[in-house]
Image (spheres, rainbow, N blue to C red):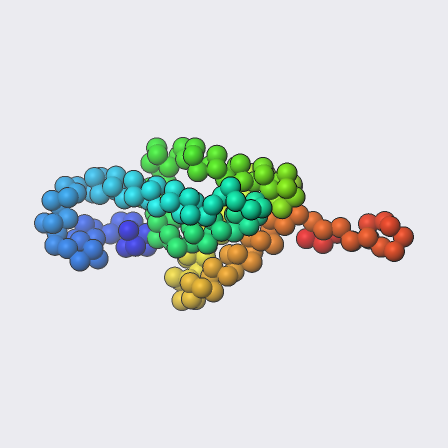
Length: 181
């Protein structure tokens, strides 16, 4: 999965080598590239669902839930590269990710209600922001050779800042003097 996340066109011989198995062993389990991609797609879905489950999306305030989800999903860097890359993104099962999307929509709506997420940000925007930041962080860590810890810290800082609702500071006469984000 790591190799295909970086190089979706890698030949089966390289995939077998990266998996530390012989090419005949790979072909025994996956007779062709399509069956391997099917298996990888299924495994990616399982891993993403498990990460969101571990994040406890229904616990605490919504912004914190999304930050926990970011931490859990960040460790799936190569998996996310596959899901959003050319190998899996065009597959029917990734065009309709209803359960994941519904869970994230619910969290954002809860964040609007509990005032932990800026109400100007729609659920679809927050989802796009989350996935984009995670993909960017994985690419950043890999391409710039930054530590994964550093890349995750930047994701969490950026996402937290983007999600926070504006804070109103009052002047001494009771009027709104400044809006901070």
